[in-house]
Image 1 (tube, rainbow, N blue to C red):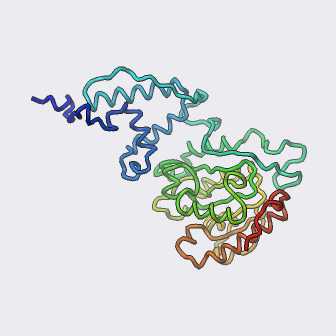
Image 2 (tube, rainbow, N blue to C red; image 1 turned 120 degrees about the vertical axis):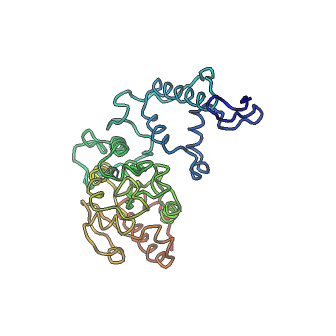
Image 3 (cartoon, rainbow, N blue to C red; image 1 turned 90 degrees about the vertical axis):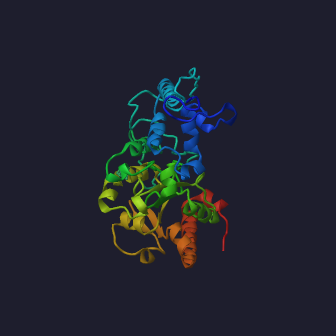
Length: 331
Ligand code: SF4
């Protein structure tokens, strides 16, 4: 009588109409988490997202066990029986230390390409020390610690922490206030419309994230509803940015927006007054400018933002010979 239903009361689907729901359950979850359309419709089971991310910190053997367990659970729940185990071959076999969380866990979200080698005497460069070596700390360790951090309440509402990414010794360190919805979903900084505009702004003066910049935020987890981060959240997160600046040794910092600039300069002055010139921050010239999302809301800010970018270009020409030789003239 009930042959169209499995023993859990779930309707069976004919072989010819098999949908993605009849993929091995682990594969289905992975596909769902990668599909922005599916994710935006809320089909990606939120409860599984941290689980899939947790999976990135496991050894291949641990990952296989998790995948087989999820497949078995999915088989029983959906169809009432167990299929033969699928064979998995996970490529990355990460260190088995502290599988849940470790400062030493490698990170694949920090994209490090050919670094600029800091010149002797640059801010943060220790004479006699190999450039880029800063004790036992590293960008990967910062990123791993950020992903595990529960230092403020923002960890309870984040989907993914956003440590930041870019080259290891950038010409420019761009610092925004915090991740938005797109960043929270992807774990990457400045990936929405504001991020696309930032890329265009940087390209206008011959810069790219892949070759010249590192992009970070004051807080690494999304404040709900894109509100400003609270002072106590900023304070809890400050050490991550401090470590990043010490390791990155950027030639220039671009403060993107009011919140990041006010935080770095410890002031309540508005961005309209702060922008338009450089202020030293930890021995590094800091140029405040409007956040790209402010430019999207108010086109009249594009002209002053372009003036800021021209200041940035002039400063980089002074500081970096290679940039000076390759920078576009611009208007
Ligand atoms: S915002 Fe910073 S301090 Fe707060 S949980 Fe995220 S990483 Fe930790």
